[in-house]
Length: 205
Image 1 (tube, rainbow, N blue to C red):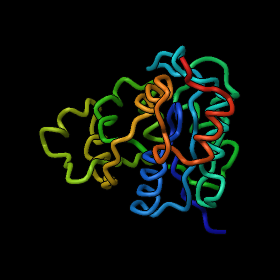
Image 2 (cartoon, rainbow, N blue to C red):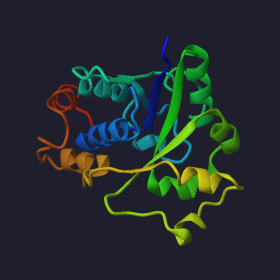
Image 3 (cartoon, rainbow, N blue to C red):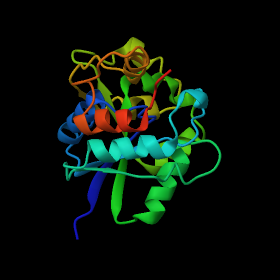
């Protein structure tokens, strides 16, 4: 049986928006993945958890956003775990649950320069392939590569797996602000997500 390559796309998804979906599609196509697994974070270690909608709402919004796309799926692995959400623990749990699949971790280019701060980063790098999605026209030159504060051979290896994504200037922060101010979010999020937010009165100040 052919093993499937699945991209792990983690994030707060607070809420998920069209930009997230387009990046996932770009990564799947350019890295020739068989699918993308969205992993909403549980308790984030680098963000203020007080600003997050409850996990069950963020999970449900991702589920609603990708319902009609057979290439996309969502995992509750981080919502089921107590304590902080660490990528290495998430990958380990997924590999244990689905040993028949090969996982790759999808990163934004800016994250490359923060990887040295990640919990047990070298274990994570050994566990799965890292795929970096860049803004159109962006390049990781020698100066940028020198900013990746990891031991060799990781800076070189990480820079071998780059792909350009569409530039979509949408942010969850802006969407939450618009909702709090009574502004429309049509076309920024999928219709099913817009409906879910309205039904559950999320992000209203």
